[in-house]
Image (cartoon, rainbow, N blue to C red; front, side, top):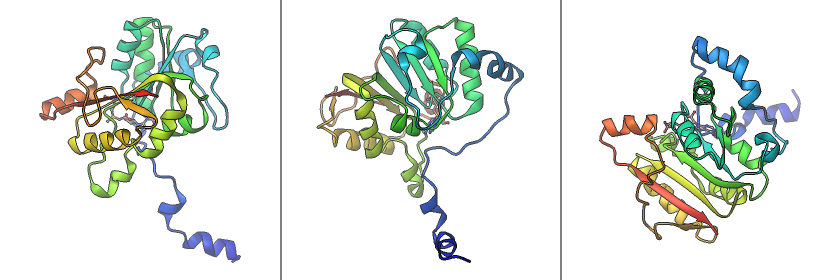
Length: 239
Ligand SMILES: C[S@@+](CC[C@H](N)C(=O)[O-])C[C@H]1O[C@@H](n2cnc3c(N)ncnc32)[C@H](O)[C@@H]1O
């Protein structure tokens, strides 16, 4: 055995793999979702390979402002927002295949032309796929809360993510997050207010924003509501 083999075997697995904000559960596709991948993905899906930079104007066929949603779940609230705001382009990134299939079907059902879908780790796309200042806004609604302390490192909203967001959101553009986990809300507020050289808290330092009228109720929010979880919105403007 060579020296390098010995060394790699001695490296604990957690230092070899990136810590991700999701665990991929494949889940079964419905017949309709299968059809969506075959027929709708070529039109509304975005194939991206690490290293390539997305040309958003070519992707949408125009240079309107682009809103990115990270982790859209089943995509219904994203489709609703895109339908209500046709003056902007909307790009959703989600890793869960059935959710992506569901959103493709929503795009078809609503006849949307201003929404595109990616199936990828959004953190990787933010790191390497988007030009500086290319986005008008980024939204992150009800990210996986990873409630156990030993899993907090998997929470997607971190100082690293805030740095990535600052690179891709144009000056004056918006980052909007929402969560129904009180501890995660506090952490979000601390991390975002801590980046005061990059983002200004629209509600004033240390404050949550009132729920904006344009945010539809999401699937996970409804679940939280049934459990009696209060919701915190956090809205920040890129300086
Ligand atoms: C708790 S769900 C919330 C879904 C939706 N926003 C809602 O409110 O109904 C979080 C979603 O984020 C997705 N997700 C987690 N990390 C992600 C990442 N790095 N890139 C893309 N999607 C991610 C998960 O697959 C999951 O569908």
